Image (cartoon, rainbow over all chains, first blue to last red; front, side, top):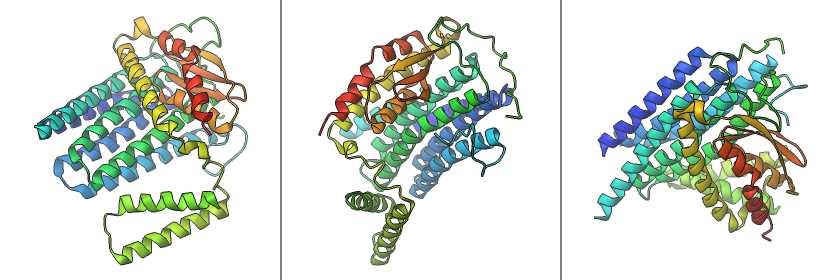
Length: 97
Length: 121
Length: 158
């Protein structure tokens, strides 16, 4: 069973490497954010798999919190790239409406 | 007997999840523009995450870990479309043209055609 | 009041599922955090708007199973397109008319469309959606209006 878990983890690492290539190539800033979003989702799955491989159940809380932080981080980065200021609001704000 | 079958099923789920994950990695590399790459990234958010987490839940059985794994899945299912939509909207707001409206299929652009968005928006 | 009570029940279940340490002190701390969060939610005036009773209908699990099947199908399509992008990728923007009445129905529709790979909602208006579709097949399944019919069915349960 551990073999299957490790194989799955390896597949996820390959995915992260491919997403990293896209993040480096760009060309626009949003392509990079898409790639970072993919890497974040994969990180949650990797942590969940490591929990199963190591048998240390406490690690699952890390995955749970990372799943939430990842979403907040993506929206914050998008807002930062759009408004140049996290506290700004007004015309063209993506977090509004 | 049941044990063996559950192990086999969860193994199939995990490996299929990994396979879909790699597809979701290849997609953003090969698709022509930003909006199409968004679709490919959606594979990793939905089916890949679902298969891997369900595989792990089958292995863990009835335990506290299973509840937390299901919670991770619920969070992902609720946040993934919001993040995708925010990305698409941010792309549109920056003036990246998503293609033709209600018309002919947009021509598939060559790989590196979309330039940097204007930074003073 | 009903909404506050249901929020408290959901939060207590969440706390019980996450804690794993069942001792009297922990119960007191958990109850304290539940009360604090409910009080904060009331102060922020966020309770009630998103807690629509339709969300607790017995039809919801059936809808989720149907949506899961749609997601599986479109995932396979998009994975095939990832391997042969030149042959299959036909991106375009569609305008999808929508006759759903309630705000929750509209948001459910838009979110379900985005959750299905191959289609992303760009704009949500009162009577239509603008959707970016990746493949011929994803555009066709959207234009058939199956998903809207399902959500109308989901909402009509009272």
